[in-house]
Length: 299
Ligand code: SF4
Image (cartoon, rainbow, N blue to C red; front, side, top):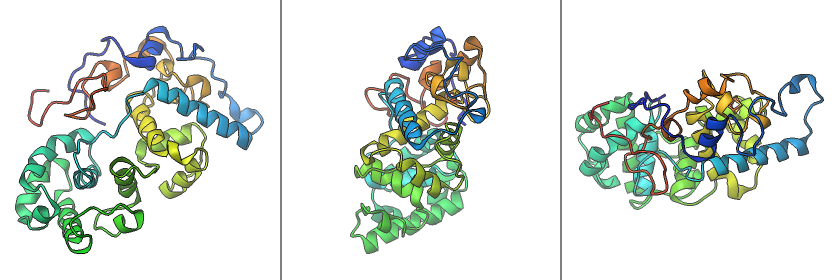
């Protein structure tokens, strides 16, 4: 997880979750402390219909909390998003966003990147880690786009996954955000949260994707992914979920897995919820938080 570069915890939180954090209540006004789902293990199993309804309610709540949810990689084209997503493996979106301005200035097109000197490319992407393997993927996928797809990133899953270094998760990110094709992106946050919510028990990302897709209409898939990933990064953290400041606690069977004291939980909130900069250097206009600082800036 990204280390906050500004520890202004306690600044005025924004949005519904911020208000919830301040009052200790969910955005629907229910106390974050007596969730309906708590203790489900001793209750009758949840029916399929009840699960679908609860999942959709969580999605609606998240839409209220994060109306500005978006991909947290800076990009201006499908090619830039593809490259940024490949670089995001095993590092933060922040580190990728700090690295890509120089990279795209040096190699603006797939043709330019395919012709790059491998060592020069490696040095440019070094801050993202695993830079030799990532450079190999970028050289390979750029050459494939140049040679097999006329210099344009293909807009079909079956083509994208043939590119070196591109798996289903990367392909779905690109399809959903650069081509408007609905897709669910199962990253570490997404998997953790949907298991905490008992939407699935699967661990395998493809099975998680299939089960979650089955709970929602296609039109929701892309934004649902952003909202869940936003929630995982800001409130429902891997080690210390901020349950006491969580607006969907009344719908969560895992309430209590983290800090339930509202004041202590509020201190765990990240990014715009905690008054800290976000991951994007160029966030969308409606983002209520601060932009991230460039690489090497103080912090
Ligand atoms: S922080 Fe996570 S585990 Fe805790 S109540 Fe919210 S969604 Fe559930």
